[in-house]
Amino acid sequence: MLTFLALLALLAVNVTLGATLPFAQVWIVELAVVAVMVALILLVSMEVIHEPPLIRLFSGLGFFWVAIMVGMTLTDYLAR
Image 1: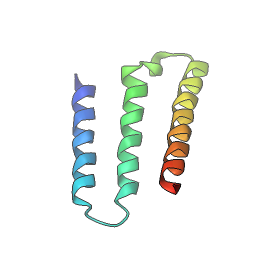
Image 2: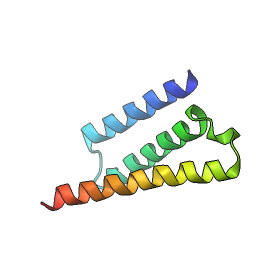
Image 3: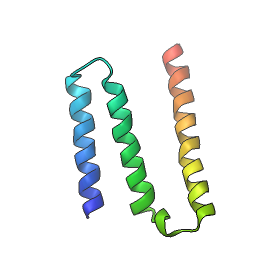
Image 4: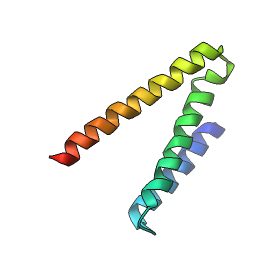
């Protein structure tokens, strides 16, 4: 329950920052908020914190790979 509330609060922060654009480099703060959200999902919701180190490594690499794929998709979309 606390994880859910924390994710909702971080989502509210991210939406507020995106809607108001308080400064030019706000995207850096938004990426940091998203990184905290991913860490919460990995460590608490997926219970990776209780797994052996090899499973932790591969779960982190999986999320990293998804981030690379999303970045490549956005690069292709924004370059056209």
